[in-house]
Amino acid sequence: MNPTQSLPCAATTATLVRTIEWVDTDAAGHQHNSAVLRFVEACEAQLFRDLGLPGYFPSAPRVRHELNYRAKLYFGQPVTTTVVVEKIGRTSMTFSFEVWGEAFDGEPRALAAHGSFVTAHVARGATAASPWPAELTAKITARQG
Picture 1 (cartoon, helix red, strand yellow):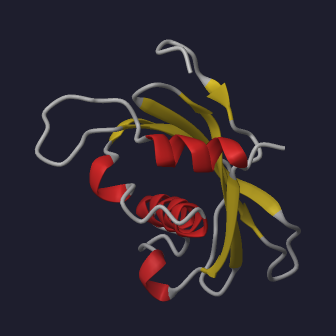
Picture 2 (cartoon, rainbow, N blue to C red):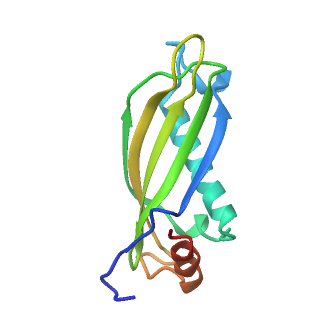
């Protein structure tokens, strides 16, 4: 791969279904904003477990995060989160995500949040980004459709 090239990876995805628990809500009675971030991170973790890449997290800090809230989520409501690797560059990776509140209490399924985030590869003990390990790049790009 050319050092400046990014590879599209739209088929590299994971989906996770959870339920809004009491701890996920705030005084207003709907999800606390941090709940969406936790669901996204749990889905990201599932993706890298599925890929057999447990070493990803200790070396992949977030360098950018964008989150757009669209609908409320309530205690007891099922939630489906999907994370997609959109592209992988030499030292960074871009993801998109959606969090859907499933039909609940007479209301239809609705997009509750969506956004994107970028991680960079920073090896343990390093202070700057470095290229992703070849094994990680190979496993992510192998899932392309």
